Length: 126
Image (cartoon, rainbow, N blue to C red):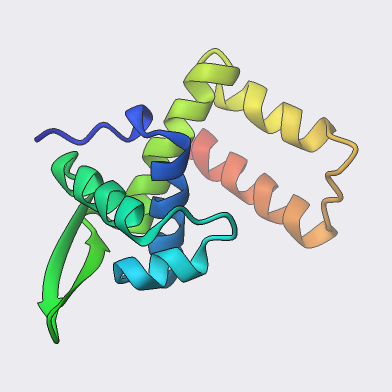
């Protein structure tokens, strides 16, 4: 089945975030790792659905399934970022960066500013 990360429910996204943070996890790991976890059987159902959606795969280890993401964290983060850009910033990376930099919560260090300047310079050259 085709991957549709933008069609994940809040709980499915929460489970994916947990598994990405750990690299892999069993249903029991997921249940104990979530702050407001559903029942064990509900976690197993969510994992099966995520597997059907193509977001997870599993391997068997000692009679239990260990779930792993089907794509790298980097690829998934790019896909998620594209969704955020499309939904909140009219597809504009410049608008997103401007919103982040202008935020009162944003306290960029001199090092971070230098890194951003370097990235912009590289983008101009290519």
